[in-house]
Every structure is written in structure tokens, then in C-alpha cells.
Image (cartoon, rainbow, N blue to C red; front, side, top):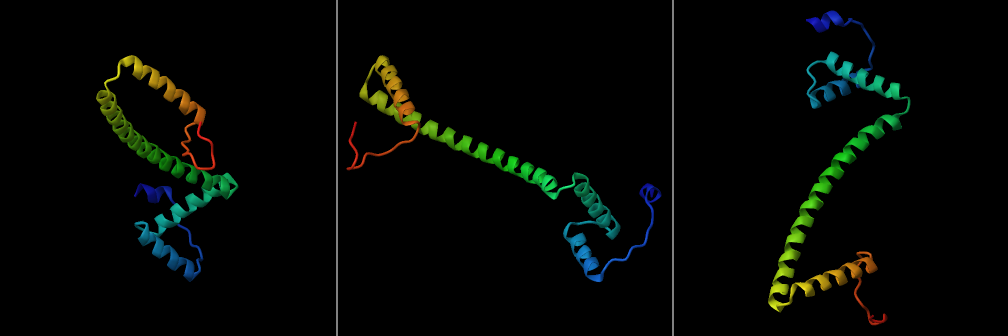
Length: 134
């Protein structure tokens, strides 16, 4: 009842087609009454007018959604990279143990691999018959 005391009753003319759309959306978005639906619609429209440009208002919503999607993607990529690192470490360990090299050989190999990764900038290419192998 306190909401009724804070609210004012008014009469407005609404086209029948718009009223039908409001009733459909009221059910779709689980809004209890027409009044509550109209209040929510007016709050949304007032926010839009306050921002003066729909692009500013919509961009905030899009930005928030994209940030959530990027966070999800970041977590997924992180999990996949962890699995890849574990598999690579297992493969390297098997090779290293099987070839019976010393730790100094491993350090030298590591240094060479870092230099190679920097040289190719992380892009692995395969030699073709048209290119010289270096």
C-alpha cells in the first residue's frame, strides 16, 4: 500500500495494438500488473532520454555483455592452455628421460628454443619445396 501512496493515478489513451503488445510482453517478462510494466517501460525510456543518444545507452549494455563473454572466453582459454602445458611437459619429460641427457643439455636446449620462438615470433611455419631450409 505504501507504493500506492507514493504513486498517482492517471488516465491515458493507448492504441489497442500497443496495449496488446504490452500485455504479451507483461506475460513474457513475468511482470505482475500493467501498471508495473508501464512503470518499467517509462523508467527505461527516461534513462534513454537522459543519455540523449541511444548509442550511448545501448553501448553500455553491449560493453557489459561483451566483457562477460570475454571473461568466459579467457577462463576457457586458460583451462585449455593448462591442459596443453601439462601434455607438453609430459612429452618433454618422457623424451628427456629416455635420451639420458644431462641438465646442462636441457639448459642449452631451452636457450635455443627461446631464441627460435623469438625469431619466428610464435608463428610456426613448415618448410615447402619452394623455400630454402635454414
